[in-house]
Length: 328
Image 1 (tube, helix red, strand yellow):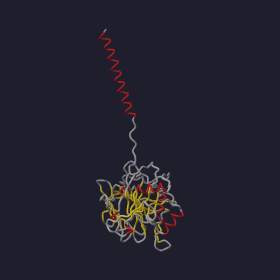
Image 2 (spheres, helix red, strand yellow):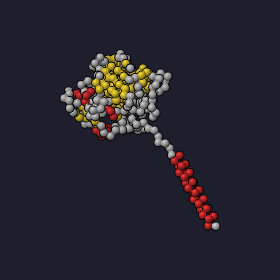
Image 3 (cartoon, one colour):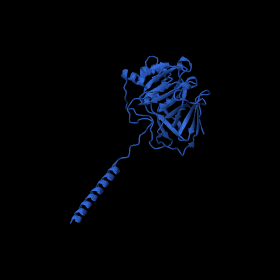
Image 4 (cartoon, helix red, strand yellow):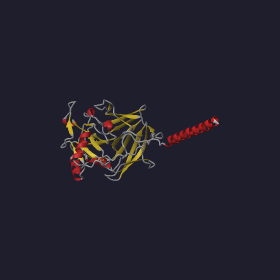
């Protein structure tokens, strides 16, 4: 009888263990896999970005800082056969950026796309008129306290202006600028790796803006990024001493002409045009379209499918149709 009771208790115990194990297994099975998220920028964030005009004059390139933290950077032609950079920052607590230069009215077309707060030190007369008449939220080194000067390389005064994100945030708050937006991002990122295997090989890219100014990239196959150079010199951050890189490169071809004063440039940023998307060692031809100044630029493959970019920083090279790029 005692053996019989012991057998019953043993059976009940084993059944209970099996049930508990089964429940634990089922709970493990029911747990959802963590959601894949874009790392370069929080695509769900409603924080307004800052769009910062960065000096790209030949003598000032060596003192540039903070471009490595921008999620996207435009290189835009300006007068004097030169270019300036428009760097976008979002959800960064603190960062030194420089050197800062003056605004051009064409830059507003890219500022509007993301409802960014425009950061610059001075302005052309066209930019001043439009920033004022359109009531653009801008922070200007000519008047605002979020800017300062440093001159470690004994450059001319116009190449010595800096700011930092914390100062910009505090000033934007003091000015009662809206700090959030529903506008969203321009680019569409993919959580899965994008490989353009059907495209042409793109290990070296050369993008001139004039006969005295050019940008080039060389593919780093190990790290799957493009190392950036300016005027055939490595593009180095003055603070980190690291070469700038790009995960994605978009070449956007546009028509350009001189403005009515025969000095500043007019850029045709609206309408449609051609371009190239370059990533992971390959390039594919694309089209771009922009309905109006406030609208987002849309980038599509030739079949009409919208371009999805790799998770990483992007340089958009705005190049005049009068210039030609090369890809090897």
